[in-house]
Image 1 (tube, rainbow, N blue to C red):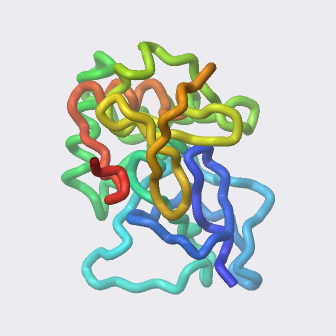
Image 2: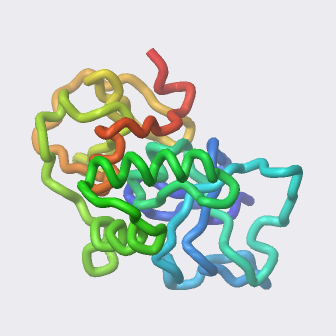
Length: 205
């Protein structure tokens, strides 16, 4: 039976056989004896996105009183949920993200803790996922941005909408009436400033 550790673009954590391209964590939020989640969904404001493979290291999933292994379809999904690149296993990506985040948000010398604090304000609203009004027309959002309408999440690629699922993306041709932005605003500005999120192969034209 799959463990409850797959993350949706809205930040929910679900049990599904699909794993995805990235792992990551929000601190310790599971009971290693039962391999089940606790009631809390984060224990640290540092929500990071990590490589699934790094230096050949292997660790049993949710088996220790250590960080809870979460899994994401791709980096756009992780960004939408409120995560950022890890400065340990993804150091080069994290540095590029920080430079783009500083450029897009008009700051300098931002530390990881400062980025985490800003993201924490943008990703949660009284414990629930914070949705943002679109800061620009939908078709002008950068590749990798994600929006929500109703119960469905959508990726923007070259002005097109792709419907998200744990298995990947599917084309979507119907217009959205009142979409809201899932991607935190400061992360969106980093993408506009040049950071390119890693997208699942099903997002390719």
